[in-house]
Image 1 (cartoon, rainbow over the protein chains, first blue to last red):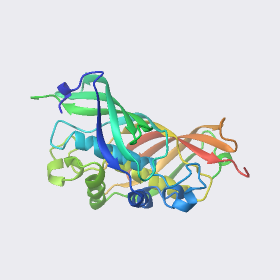
Image 2: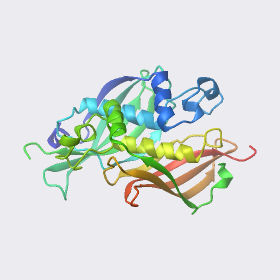
Image 3: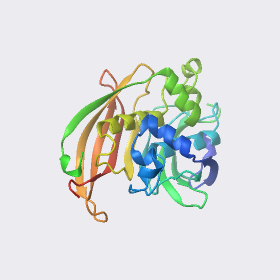
Image 4: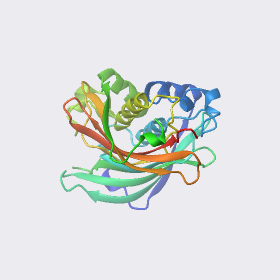
Length: 146
Length: 146
């Protein structure tokens, strides 16, 4: 995918990432050891009502689906940041996540010749089309033949 | 830490997370397999000039420092989301990250009795006080004695 491959308003849906209890606990043990991400029994008494993935784990799973859609060695050049990340619903083991995207804006970089900046709106949904996370992300892409 | 422990304008600095090449590659292999996060040689030709951590890995390391500051079983009730996450500089192996925070706003939840929402500005800095990431985060905290 190169900069020229994006058009404002384009939409797509991709990915199928199965959330497992073991991976939820493994990620949380390293990076977000709060009881509602670690202990199924204790989590029943939390705001979430059960063991659920760290919000950052959901971001990581989202990223993996994104990279699989835009494979390495293509025109992707990374991201300067994101806006308005919202964890709308708990992400429970057993969910199968996918991503819906929509191209919001496209513009050429003023400082980097041959590079364009694409702003996308993303929704992460489960297998029942429940939206669990939304995020607006900027990403740099090479221009074709640059 | 409970809701009442936060005052607008309060600042602090905490954490010391050493970024290692093996952890950068391990995280990226699972969640962000782009060459500049996986292969030191190939990364030299990227925009980043060398192997660097996935931005989501930096978020995960930031979260670990945050949880260690606000230990489990305290008043922390999770987060509904974040605003304006910016990956300002590449995060290279050898960096030792820490977090600077500042309380931006505090308010009681209208829908959840006994719960307050604290908005914090965070900077993630390396051992030379270079700011590598900024983020504005909302978090729910229990009110004391609620």
